[in-house]
Image 1 (cartoon, rainbow, N blue to C red):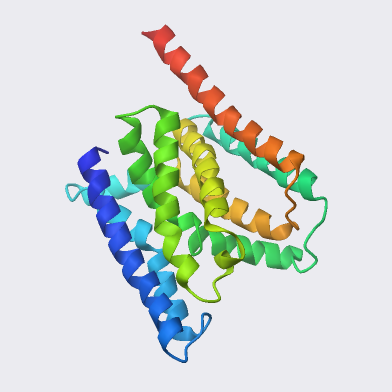
Image 2: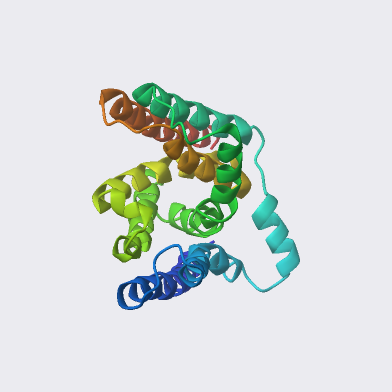
Length: 249
């Protein structure tokens, strides 16, 4: 992927999502419809798929079936272990900082929510953010800067949600969501760097979304320390990989 492809991806992504989400905001504000009604929900979900749709239009037309197969199912050896490392770190961080399970999140609800979060409400975005944008940026700038840039852009992509009356994101200040999104981009970025596997990124993104709903979140030193530690792990892995590449050359 190159910068030209990334720019094309971003234009399509923001065009689809912003038209849909600002449209929902206007519908809810100026009609009798409320967030959760069928029409706003359908439009909202289409907007959710902005990154995925844009990614499919950005992988190139030549030999499209082969490119699509490689795009969706590439995998680097031992990549699963880096995925499991970050799953363990974020699970311990959220679990130990909270120590209080959400009573409404039964095992069945967790499974259903996870499927929804992977394929409809978050994970599907990884086709674009990690599949297109991150590789393009990583060719021009270092991993930490690429992850930071992805996080900022991702936060701006979410901005319309704070103008949709009744949307769950309004329960959290935008700057908090943006900060968490930047950290998440470091974790997802390293999973992709080490695994090259978009499905693993989709699974991790969906898992984090559901995990945050499964516990009663509490802001304390354990949560802050865990988030910083998990992010530091991503940067350390990048430095180790960089040293390995230098040693081989």
